[in-house]
Image 1 (cartoon, rainbow, N blue to C red):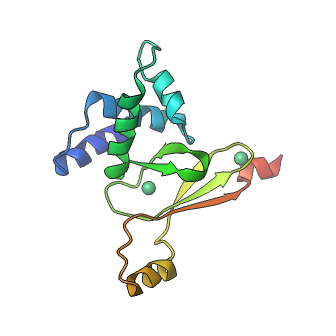
Image 2: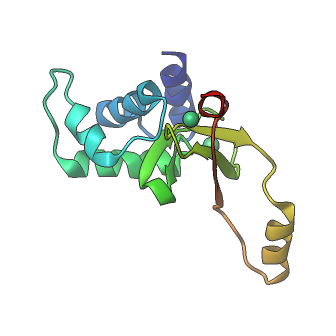
Length: 141
Ligand SMILES: [Zn+2]
Ligand SMILES: [Zn+2]
């Protein structure tokens, strides 16, 4: 999978290791194609269909988030792989209420919010926007 190769390169540059467990969790997120719950990742973790121990998955998710390879969608309590590479970015999602798919938008983020934080001397290093509605497929039904 090209995304896994890219992730490996990204971790190398950051002098971090994409261990087999971290890589496996990222692979599952990429395959899911929609927000995945931690317990689903735990259940699917083993190549042989056997679950793993929860801390393995939670630690891997934590790592992937820190490297910008995954995001947590708070309102769904679920995770998605990020395909936007290694640049720090504001994550903005369009989440379909009907089929629960999510799509990440490449936006500059709400500049007003960032500027407001700046004025207060607040250095914002994470911002996730979760927008809800119906995707094109579900609207067509
Ligand atoms: Zn992202
Ligand atoms: Zn939909």
